[in-house]
Length: 237
Ligand SMILES: C[S@@+](CC[C@H](N)C(=O)[O-])C[C@H]1O[C@@H](n2cnc3c(N)ncnc32)[C@H](O)[C@@H]1O
Image 1 (cartoon, rainbow, N blue to C red):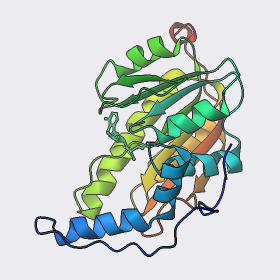
Image 2 (cartoon, rainbow, N blue to C red; image 1 turned 90 degrees about the horizontal axis):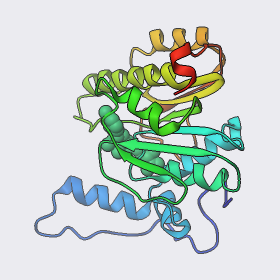
Image 3 (spheres, rainbow, N blue to C red; image 1 turned 180 degrees about the vertical axis):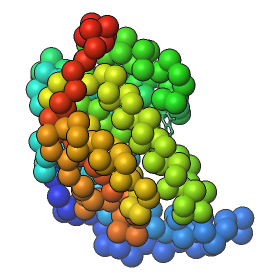
């Protein structure tokens, strides 16, 4: 596996890219472009062949929490453009693992990953995903995020709703002892979800990987040791 912590290394550029304001580019899109060009994780993702800078977040979470283990079934929710799935596929390569990745947006193909277009919020999504997994999941990852409105409390409510849906999926698919990672925004009403996770898992921790932008309120809950038992009809999913 490639470098695990800082993105810099030989070949990475200093943070000096400037972007000229093109006639039809707005100030905010110029700022976005400038930030992208100067972001060391964007540069590293390009260098290392990852579809997104988000790949380094999973690398850092996995280095810390040892989430990815040989011969496991992984469900990656909100997977596009595919950085997390690429990391999972690399780290599980050579083992009998299954990685199912879903998103509303088209993405892939990614070697070693079953990429599917699916809205996780549709009522029968769990049944469909169970079919793709071919058995109980050992790890459910959710980096799902709605498109942001810029209105902080609205965005927090929407991401929390997606996190709750992700946990419903996890409850329907996780094997006992399994793990669950979910993205949230700090400051939202996460208390209820956190309380449920603390009851249902032996260990729950907060994490803000170094690759998560400092100016973003994003954080992850990492829950390990699922105490739940699969219902009989779910044991053969
Ligand atoms: C931050 S991106 C994920 C980045 C990804 N982990 C990676 O490494 O490239 C969030 C994704 O969540 C997806 N998403 C949002 N709502 C969703 C839903 N209801 N069902 C499936 N995917 C969803 C978005 O389309 C978006 O691609």
